[in-house]
Image (tube, rainbow, N blue to C red; front, side, top):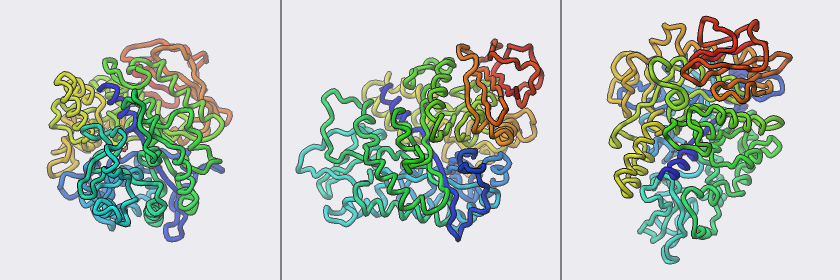
Length: 593
Ligand code: GLC
């Protein structure tokens, strides 16, 4: 069970983003360009916005587009450049919008197309670009394509999906990430056939081998680009391409190996190149970010090398999976949150990969991961602020495009539901039931895992103020608000200059001021053997910045091998100075050497 869960966590990371739209009707002139010769998205700070939980404007308990529009000044105040928004298209919400029933309509809880246009115009006015979430691998089973496809074997939409006729017997086993039986084939009696669903039964996989389906998807992309979005986050894209001869899995096949057998079939490159040629390349500097958690490290450049004309960036989930509470055995490195050496190893390995070409991204939290401060830092009231500030100092000083997840700018924490009935996430519910069939002990173990690492932890409503439901809604929130909202919210932090919110604004400004160093400069580890501190030097444009990060809740020693006592301190999460060579609990500091 634990291994299965681990794989799932690996798959479910990731995401994001976008494009400078140059279509005449939607001039990109309103949004800033990148540095000379560099695409804008390399130096952008991207904010991931989970719309269900951001701001409800009509009291139905679900966040909506008008709510986002009301908060645009706040978003601008953060200093962000782009927003990757999780799905907002029409959906029965089996998987919170990742099951789309109409790719060109807005989900009814979220509002109307007019609300979308107003929101996008408001973003453009504030120099904020929008990156849409593009769900490529599957639609909803309520999409008209699937309704047609399942009605008859000869329906024109039949081959938009993958079918196995029952007269051929039982289909070769395929593992499903979300299915209660972990079985990716579902029998449908109308046509006496099985259909494929790598995710839930309500998310049938689309057949990318069919040129008619591909054309539909490109048309959808064009629809949103014409509206003026600046890019796409490609959801679960490595699964689009499959070996449709459906070879039987080897006898010793285990669920954990499924990626090796049916993730990122080589045809995925053909699809991405075609998408680029037929759509993306026609709209100027459009940005794409693929959910790349399942892409093997050795294959990453095959997607993002500029010369291949596929996608711009991927996000990986090694860091997110590597960090976990000590008592939980998660991620390939099994490093736990105290293994700073493991963290350094991952960061250095990925930085090396992009030394010469390509570009990468990094996130601490996303909608498929628990909250950063609970997972990587320390969410006890005594350490929450300092550790959240330290972690974001880390994020904003890496040579990548950083993704800031909504709520992390105030250090929101895990909700840690105790009872499975509190969970909304279908993955958590189905995996729990699967575990329960083995034993109650397994199910309890899964629940403990979910409390720390489950997806609902990062999906609770944004805590805006101390009023009822934290100012998120006047109705009943679709997912409970974290009880700590009366002491942890945006309004309180606005009035406190030492808050996480103020610090993150300063940190983003600093990244931009020193972009030659902090965005584009080289990264060199310092004090590499130190098991408590992550230290490194960023260097560019003749300047050097030393970054010191203490991952411990106690004083530690640091020896970065450079003199920094007299150097200018650019930012830090403590206001007073301390003896050289010592860092206080969760201390973070940047020095201009
Ligand atoms: C991606 C999304 C995740 C979703 C899954 C199925 O992994 O990030 O939230 O459940 O795809 O679409």
